[in-house]
Length: 462
Image (cartoon, rainbow, N blue to C red; front, side, top):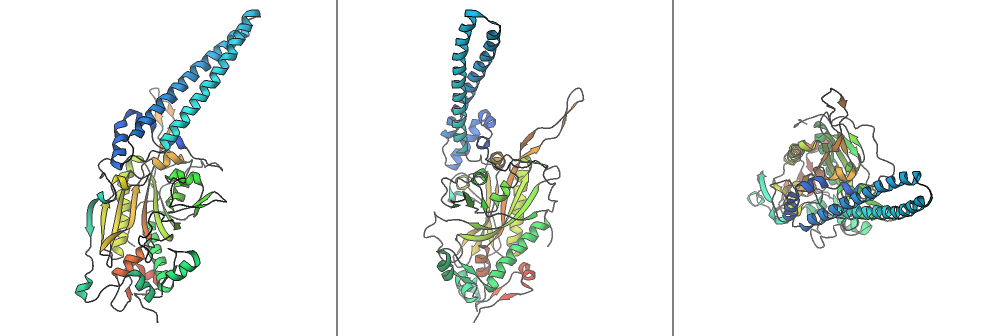
């Protein structure tokens, strides 16, 4: 497959490894120094999301209390140390008086430390509620307030061809390739079996996506489907309040809704070497979502299900390169959609429809003939440094030289993370419906044929 914007995968990370019991970094969700210096940007972001802008002021108030408490503690601690030296030199009644004062001072220090700890905890709890700051200029509002960037391809005119298209489930049943009834029998509603050529078509789709990723410097990964709560939280998912997440209570583990979660946690508490460019991973995983908030929606077929497979791109890069990398991810998604012969549109998602960790998100929505509308097949998000701060993923800054010519080791800073879908089970809906024939057969997109042993058409069974 031809390379598009091909680059090497970047250097491997340093040997700094996550501790065996990684617990997360709740105080590093956002840059408190930046918020303190520019609170209006944070208020504007909250307003655009339709979220609570007053949270900014509560964080600043908590920060002021925290810094005041720390100052009080340090002052008392210094006074305590000074008294210690006086006591060592004093004798007799003076020493007894000083000891009494030291005892009271020790109690004051302990109280001040408790106050500082409590203030810090309050600030962390408030900061943990704050979503990522949006990229300036993206649309405000909710789900329907997106900006249409472009439309690619022309939806197929079935009326002009003289037949009414079947929906993907009817086609899947004609091909003996989708079995919802037995899926429900085995696992409940919104589960399914893929069979025969439809099962092979899904695998072909994911393999083609993986090859596209390989052509562009991604490292292929097969990722865990279960993760610890610290990793789920660190990625930006609220395990306490998100009804979409499956939890395995006995083991305190969570089933991932995307390999983004595992790939974000892969370098938790590490310092990466990005001197050779972005570090790119392509994660292949099964994904699990309760779809708790979608009762009664898309109950027919495999558009909205509890389990599906996905090839997810995940990138670590310099923060200043994140916007350009976001455009690359979108370009690769569009290349895959065009290769599958799908008509689609690209939207710039409104701030109120972004996830907690995303600062900007582009969606590609493919035309679904029997629904007469575009439906999301891919999304790509620029999470800036939000996830990396939560998971303590950093890069080493270059060495510096002072006026005397002495070399000083560079400090560290949070990296940027991005993600994007390159293929998923839902694509079968658009592929089957777009490429169907009047007799119920389906023409295989050319890009997928090598993975189906050259098969060009999926034909009805029986």
